[in-house]
Image 1 (cartoon, helix red, strand yellow):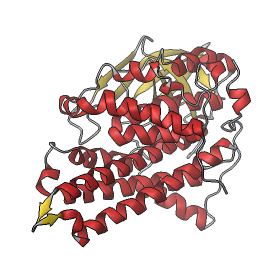
Image 2 (cartoon, helix red, strand yellow):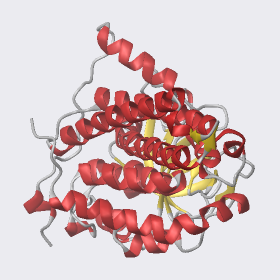
Image 3 (tube, rainbow, N blue to C red):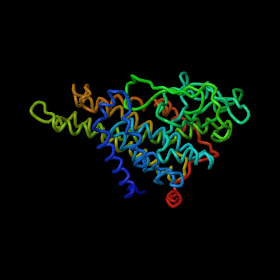
Length: 403
């Protein structure tokens, strides 16, 4: 078993680290207070190739592997969660969903401009009354000749007012037995008649990003925009979540790391009772736990990335990585605030923002409770992964780097 990263892995991570530290970190607190995304973030991520980091070159990407995607997400969330959220929806949910399920024509039309960063992408699954209860969504898609007429509303959608493309799921057959029947996936664009979007403000965290809603009112979507076959929407959504959850897990590791680094620096400079608080054993205990959580969570997401590279189904491993990393990012943020004392309760220090940001990831892309039930289901023999018609392609460096 080889745990070593390649030179390419390290170079990609270093490039993203420099971008995040030099171009985002200095002003992220300001944009967090404004509750808006800095206008330079998405264009610079596109310019650096981050928005297509693990998409094959022939589709406009950089041709790196899935482990690189994880490392990039870790570096981005080390500075702020909003950066990693971009990767979760643009890359993990939509672009990788197209890579897995899209036709060649759909990849050329949607995936290529997304990988080049010419278009930004989102994912519409959650509804105002249906989050974890995906199978009972109310959005509908009625076939009408060469088009589907979509109606419904999607809620808590990242990049809602920034994206040009959305992969959305709607019910095409209300009579198909649930939980997984009757849903289909579509690509819609914001210039389609009947598509409107808006932002949600005053969230607890991830304030320097875009979160909002999508409304679809009699939107005519061409049949050629349907992803997969009619009725495959649930499978497509769940496989897309496998990829999105991988980015969330890797990003949460970056948040744990940020909490640990900030705590170490503060503990070494802050003095009480005549000595740095780093010399107090209970402070050392908190930092020791952060170190353990970081190393464990990192191994879990790297394992999932290793499986992805080999084309091996990793629903269970990705779920486990997401559950563990996000739960422990909350714990790490709580401990970081505690170490900082009263200053941790102020936005003068980053750890206050880390704590607010950490809470979102234990809710979206499968709550911690959902993942706990999934893991129990695997162990109890009540859950097993069935083969998909379209599996996520294994990484092939020669093929993915080919023009």
